[in-house]
Length: 444
Picture 1: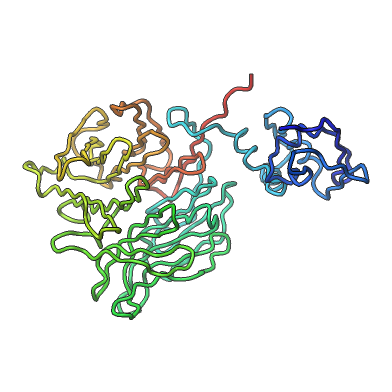
Picture 2: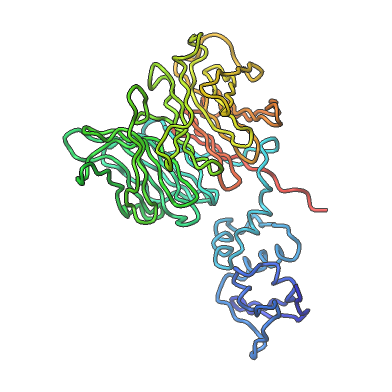
């Protein structure tokens, strides 16, 4: 990158700064300073000799020092949120995040902050966004927090119980999909796409049968890289199965109807598999007496792999599957029971048996009076499993337990989510959730 060593002079809010083109080029093409360079990364000379910016000079000084050194120092007298807003203006948020916390690593995570929600009851789900924010669902309410952990206006679903929520992603960073239960006799329920900043409903995702839009209950959600939205559905007509919609238009594009004797409309977990272009669908205990896990291929309209514990020769209570997650690189599915025993199924075998491992067990005997069943997540080649007030981290080809994340405040963990290089853990008491971050590497 051929960059001239010209000095650049700024007048920011009446205060003079001088730097070099080399330092400004570090900000990147998409930043405020990127517009000062031509396509060859040569600095375009300002005839006035000075660039005036009507912004906060104290924040500019900190951000300029960040470009020079790679370090972020925020003096106690300066509100962090003010600096973050200025960083957004200059397009330097990625630099701020890199200096504030390092690349996500479950074995190096440290607690950063705990947030107590304002909900009258317990939270049911937490979902991390790709930029480090999150949303918390409870009852008919969804509370939304941006990456600075500022709370936006909550979304009230008018007494419709929230089943799941999910962020649309890079195509629409503010888009939040919420699935709800149908209210009998009210013709409501289903799914909607909301603006997470304002709470505005953009459009609803309808299910049609014989050309007529039907009311339905939407359950678990999943998103594909080609802007498809998947949801488990059940209604009063023939709307039982997995629906597919175009995220950008809201139009229904497909529907996988529930086969006889199988349970898709009640699914607790959906996971899109990019490598195989299939959808993992899992209906878990205690939603149903038996667990059902399958892979659906919408191209061939077929169930290409399936498993149920009712086929197992031994069906004891301590083997009831509480969560499941597909691991494409290993061609396997990991499941977990209420004792945090991990089990593995080989996707290369039809209806294969579960290979259980008890190395992760944290407790034996009876569960607490108000248990929070284990949840699973896979991120950057690491496997995470929650149990009571702890999250276990597993690594390597044999998924060895390498560390545990534990906070005593807030009771048992009812859900957790990873996104934006953060881990969010939602506790069962008063909607308390913790934020875990990886500290930045030391500056040499």
